[in-house]
Image (cartoon, rainbow, N blue to C red; front, side):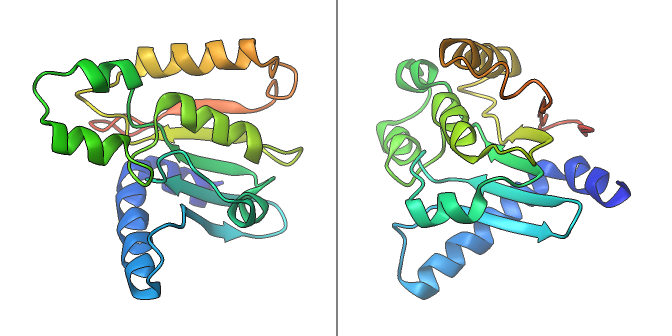
Length: 172
């Protein structure tokens, strides 16, 4: 449990490191079209998966690899409406964020989690919330409403859902 706490304590740092590693790995493999998802560790009792910067798209192979793990760190970077109407960001940045292999929106993040959760799943931490185009309240409200809309309350009743804060540590 101490190891798990350590990973969640450093959730945003891990997110950045794994994003960079995945990106460099994709460059080396010449395959920037693949989603970014990694099993950080997996043993008999617990496993930890990190999913980031995939523009919301996860192919079948990655979904199979990442399905039904114990804990998840999933990027939930932006609210789509806030991203579109933000006048302080230029269009090039918006295209990168909104693009097919850009950041993951709140809606996309929860949609991905619905596909990944299994009977083994105990916890989820949403990471990398934008300070400009998202907030903890907006992300949580979006996720809670999607759980209600798609009738996932029973399936997720034993799953702890948390939100990493970019400024403070977050415990699972």
